[in-house]
Length: 564
Image 1 (cartoon, rainbow, N blue to C red):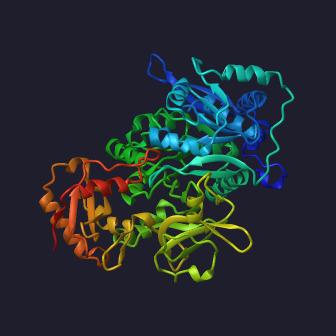
Image 2: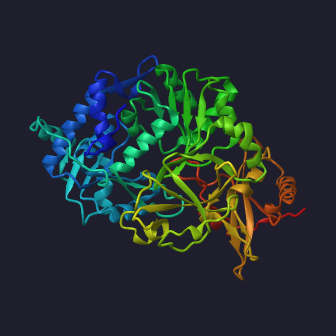
C-alpha cells in the first residue's frame, strides 16, 4: 500500500479516499444498532465509498459554516457511524479535532476545554446542554453543531451541515502539510489533570506506517477495536471496523459474550483490548472453554499486561496467533513491542522476581535512550545524561511518532521535552526502566510513582509490586509512599484481593507477603500493608492504578506492620 509520505500534501484522512478507490464496496465500519426479536445484533454500516462520500459532504458543510483549516473543534459524540464520519470530515476540512474523555470528571473537562480554546463545538444534545450550563470554553466558542435535536443553544444541526455540503459538489480536501497541527488529544489524566497533546498529520501517518509494518496488518482484515479512537486507523490500514456492543468507558466490565458474538459474526482477525478487558474476557474464556479461531493478533496497551492474563488469552487463540503488548503513550506511540510468546517463554520469570516488565525492542523508527532520573527540566540534550546499560533511569525517545508539545502547557512541555542541537525533539516518557544486554526495554513504572526512602534509596513500582502479585490471593498490588509528621517516607503496599479471596485472613496474608518481601533486596524495607476493596483506575483503559488517590487513602489509614 502506498504511503502518504510520498506526496506533498499530508492529511491523515487522505487514506480514506485511497481505500474508497481501491475497495469502494468493501465494508469500512459496522456499528451495532440494537437486536432483533431473536436476540441477534442488528448492524448498520458504511462501505469505504459511503464513508468517504459522507465525510466529504460533512466536511464541505463545515467549511461553509467557517469550521475550516486550523479551527479547533471539540467533538463530543458517542461512538457511532456519525462519530467516524465526523472525525474524518474534521480532518478533511483541515480543522483540528479536540478529543477529551468525558469520564475525566466535570472539573477536569472544564479545565481541558478552557486550555484548548476551541472555536467550534460538535456534540450530542446532552453535551451541548452541559456546555451551556457549565460554561465550557464560553470565551472562545463561536460555532455549534448538534448531532441530534437542537433545543435552546442555537447553532446548526448535523442535517443543516449536510445540506450546506450538498451545495459544494466539487469540494476538495484541505491541502494540509506534514508539520501542520492535526489534533489535540488529551492524555488519560492518570497522573493529574489531562494534558492536550498536539499531533501533526506527520505524527499520525508515521503511526499508521509503524503499526502496519510492526504487525504485518494487511488490507481485508477485520478489526474489533474496544477503544474507539484506535478504529480511526483502520481505513488507513485497509481493515474493516466492527464496533463492539459495550460501554467504552468501562472496559473491565465488558460482557465477554458480546465480544465473542462479534468475533463469531464477522470472523475477526485483529482485536485491540486494554489489559483490564483481556482479563475479563480471558477469565470467562477459561471458565467456559471458549476459543476464538479466526483471530490472528491481539494488541493490548494502556498498562503492563500481567503474564497470567496473556497465558489465559493465548489459550483462547489459534496456535499461530500472537498477542502483542506495545509500549508507548499518547505523546509517542508506538515505542516498543513484545509478543506473548517471548513473555511467557522467557521474560515472565524475570518479571516475577522483580526485574521489571520487558516491553521488547524499540521499533525501528525510534531512538530510545535511558538517562539519569531527575524531576527538573532538561533544556538541551547531552550524551552526559546517559546511564550505563542495565541501570534504571528515565526513558527518553526520539522519532517521527514523537509529538513536540502540549497545547497551552508551557511548563509541562519544558518538563517533558529535550531539544537536540539540530532542532529536533526528544520526549521524556515519564517512565523509568533500563536496557538489557540484548537492547530490549524493561519498564519499571512511572517516574512519579517511585518511593524514595529516608536513606535516598529509590523504590520502583513495577519491580516491587511484581513480587506480591505472584501471591494467589492477590489480584494486584500498589506501592505508595506515606509521609509521617516529620516528613519521612514509609513504603506501604496496598493489596486488592482476587474475587474468590475476599474472605482471606489478612493477618496470615500479611505474614506471607512479608516473607516474600524478605527474599529480595529491593523489597526488604517493606513492612507495612493495607487491603483496599477496589483500586481506583483510569477511565480510558481501567488498567492504570490511581496511585495518587491510593496514597491519600493510605495516609488516612493505619497500615498493618508485619516484618519477617
